[in-house]
Structures are given as structure tokens and as C-alpha cells.
Amino acid sequence: MRPLLILGAGATAVDILDIVAAINDRAPVYECLGMLDDNPARHGASNHGVPILGPLALAADYSDALLVSALGSPGNFWKRAGILAALDFPRDRYATLVHPASTVSRFAALGSGVVAYPNCSIMADAALGDHVIVLSQCAINHECVIGDCAILATGVSLAGRVRVGADCYLGTGCNVIQDAIIGDRCLIGMGSTVLRDVPENSVMVGSPARFLRHTVAP
Image 1: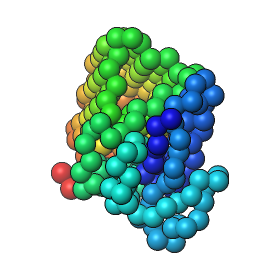
Image 2 (image 1 turned 180 degrees about the vertical axis):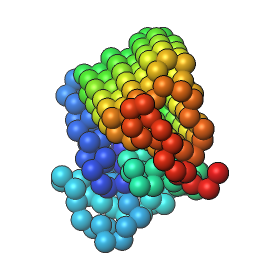
Image 3 (image 1 turned 60 degrees about the vertical axis):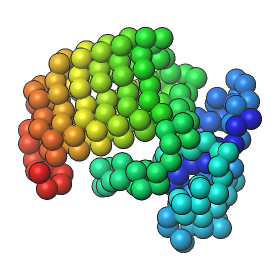
Image 4 (image 1 turned 90 degrees about the horizontal axis):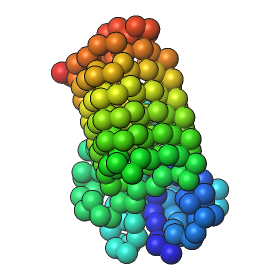
């Protein structure tokens, strides 16, 4: 079994534990050594029986272990890429984890560190960048392109040929029309319907989605 460390120790880390268990139920693949988190209050504790060993930088001491990122939230989603870049581990250190209850086309391409929750569908010629997280019930249709470190929350539906930029967060149940382009570092609010292109650094809400504010300084 391959040793595995989870970067982060919050709710997403627990979801990843569940995905790892489902993978191992089919055939033993991963041994989860622990979680790493930069919150010192968590060090020495455990989460669902898995020890929280120390800060993220401690991953350097486990050179044989694969890594997977459980970092990021709707409040700071665009910071994930910077944290991972600062760690400076090669792409092949990161495990790509797909829950067995999800469907991934043989013609789709998944980057390093991708996590797909149960009951997702990723269709032909879709391409997901590194560290993309796809929560349950998401539908990523043909020829969609998802940028590095994007997060798709539960029930997101992307029609064909949608492009989602790096460091985006698409909220629960949002829908995106075919051929739409969403720029980098965008937040699409839950339940929104995107019917046109979205400039980078935009918060969009509503159905149809309308601009609310910038996520970060443009």
C-alpha cells in the first residue's frame, strides 16, 4: 500500500478519508499516515482516528508518501494555489483520488491531485487541471476544461465546452451554459445560472448570474 498524507485537517480532509476508504474497499491501495495542518491548535490531535502530525511543511520529512490537498474554503479559495506552490513538491507527489461511485470517461484527462467525490460524471474530452476538487453529484460534460485548484461544490452542472479558470469556486447547484468561459479566481454563488462569460476575479450570483463584486483586486 502507498503511504498517503492529507494536507489540511478540516471537513474536506474527512471527505477524502472516506474516498480513500472506498477505494481501499475494492483493493488496498493507500495507507493514510495522517493529516498535516498549519493550525498549531490541531497538532497532536486526531480526526476520525487519523493523527494530525504537524504543519504542512512536515510533508518534506515523508519523502515516500503521496500527498493530497484538502485545503481551501469559500472564504479563501483563491489561496490554495499559493500554499501549494510554497510547498514546492513535484506533481508526481500528489495522488489523484476518484471515488468508485463516480464515472470518468476513458477519454477524459485528470491532473495531479484531483479529488472526485461520489456520483460525479466527467465526460469525454474533459480536462481537469491539478488539485481540482469535484464534489458529489457534479456533471462535467464533454470538452470542459477546469483550471488548476478549482473547486466545484455539490451538484454543479457544466454544459459542453465550458472553461473554468484556475482558483475558482463554483457553489452548490450552480449551472453553466455551454461554451461559457469563467475567468480565474471567480466565485459563482450557489444556485446561480451562468449564461455568459465571466471576467476573472468576479463574484456572480443569481439566475441569471449577475456581477456582485470582485473576489480580489483585479
